[in-house]
Length: 458
Ligand code: AMP
Image (cartoon, rainbow, N blue to C red; front, side):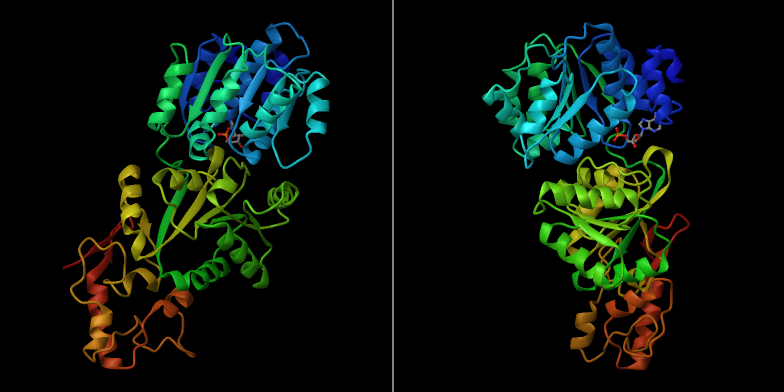
């Protein structure tokens, strides 16, 4: 399939060429014709599928056909400033030759430049709900001429408590607009909203629950207090062009970026505590390659589109399956390959099995490291629990040994690519023979099959 069949205006076709898009992505194939026909859309798709161009291109085409009235004709609502900026930047590239201009509107920055820009005849507003409502209440501009409304990442807007704001914003719209609602998941509240505001929508669904096939995923079993060591070990031994690391909290993101910086990596963090200016600086620095590592929380990283991220590291396992697919989808974008590493400790067992159920396959375990094969009872994901924990063995006066049977102290040699971190993970073996016995038992217990899945060998 080619973009030619949509018969886009040559000015839009030029934008597509400028972005180097050769063939439409699956969501573009499905959504573009329906949007061109003026239909409402319920799109179940995550970021990374090409969904922005899927709605921007046909909207531009419809806008070019209509009268140019120097009023806001398209409103796009997005949950975060980063996503708003991203969409705005995609529009700027795709619409360059059309003369249609857009502006991103969000809080944390001055209102005046936004007002000036809108009043200068901008026809597309990409806004976060809070600041948009401020403007609407201040009557700095109105939405009475809006022909197209897009609600992007609706589930995240709901997660972030924006649903009441969205409903208020709807009151400022003419009610005759074409409405496109995109969401990666469909919680009840979003389904109700869709039923309320969409008129006989075309449903477009793109395998939203699976990360792209071009991303290879690997799971590392590691205790909380060894994560930093493992991370540094992996980073030292892997060629990582551009790495996005996810942590659970803002504090952890900030602290991890600081530690990596101290360790000599060009690292920065993106988290909610930063001012908009600092967030933009971190993001731009990462995009330009000035920072090779960006440590972020889920909220802060939402919607960021940086091409060429070679690695995503889940330093902390995400709380939901959806967050996992979102994170992993930051790499391997638009047919590039990428790697996603997940650091999981024992407590993460439940969410990992949920993720694997959704993926429909086991995530490959790191078989090259001491970490997964050493102590089956401490490995979070054995097919069946090992009989004896090493804590027990220690209590019984039989210390458990490391894989090498050597103490993991000075002089111990790494046994594998990622062995440095693994060694620290191991309990100290004071008794060589017992260590070897444990080693044999561990090796016999944990095997890796041809597809890289870990299983227990009875
Ligand atoms: P999105 O899902 O909108 O965040 O898009 C993900 C990435 O895919 C962005 O970097 C887009 O520029 C890129 N992209 C969108 N459509 C295409 C296409 N048809 N061919 C290649 N890349 C695309």
